[in-house]
Image (cartoon, rainbow over all chains, first blue to last red; front, side):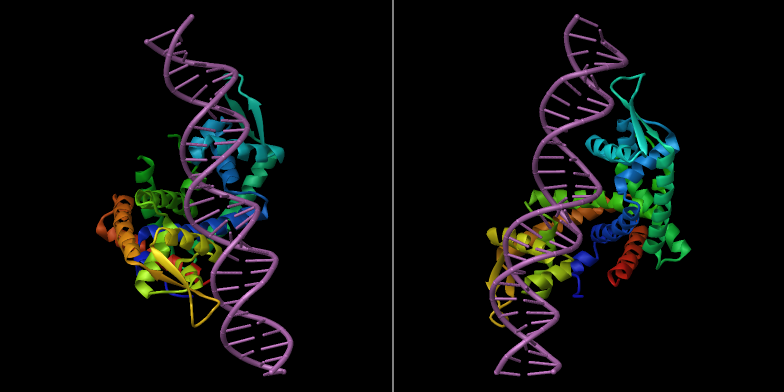
Length: 146
Length: 146
DNA sequence: CACCAACGTTGGGAAGGCCAACGTTGGCGA
DNA sequence: TCGCCAACGTTGGCCTTCCCAACGTTGGTG
């Protein structure tokens, strides 16, 4: 493998985006084994933790565009992992509900994702993992609040 | 902004990929101001640091697929930032050369990228920035060597 | 009642990353 | 020397994530 230009190798944004490629592949390989992708996990996880919700709310929780939520819910509903019904209290909304099959799928995805984390952080000791997670969380929090 | 599911918020792969979105936007906004995108920077930087090279070599240095290098070189050549000539020593290859205009463009992109780094790391002190960069570099090195 | 905001939906596009196929050219072992 | 395989550039395509604009419907508010 030829050497990477120093200009790149030193930039946090380069390290971050390149490493994100690996992280994303590890995660989505795992998801692929159960026929799912990232957006599905974000939705199922939100439903499991906060209960039935509108598509808009799911989008805000998982940082997804409304239009992408539509497509993901279509896929999840087609396989019986969620149910989409009109919200009787607000006819603009759909109420999305997690089914038992969806909860099982979520558990499968959880396991796949846990394995991905291990593979991702493999070279780091527990303390370094903690440090990294903390720093990333601080930065992400800052950028999410504008 | 609604709360993110704890399952997600705690996962390094989530922090990483989400933060990478911000990093990517900061960088590509800066690049956009000079009418460029990420692939262009990788190529110009490699040419500047290592001199004229074949497209395949540029791809390996910047972690790009051969086919994507073709497109990027087309765009760069069209604007006079690089020159593409057949390599007399190996007629399978093209020799890609940085022009003076290309070097100037690279400098512009460097400045834009530096500003992006500052914005990205804004909430961190120098020491934390160093720590983060080191940890990311260790992980990336590990995953690039298989 | 008028107006604006939120919602779901459709359609689209950009960027990065990847793969398969093809013809050309180099290098190497038989 | 010949035959084969590897590397190269190119074309064309696909997927994912992310994002935007527009539309009609519905809720809330002044």
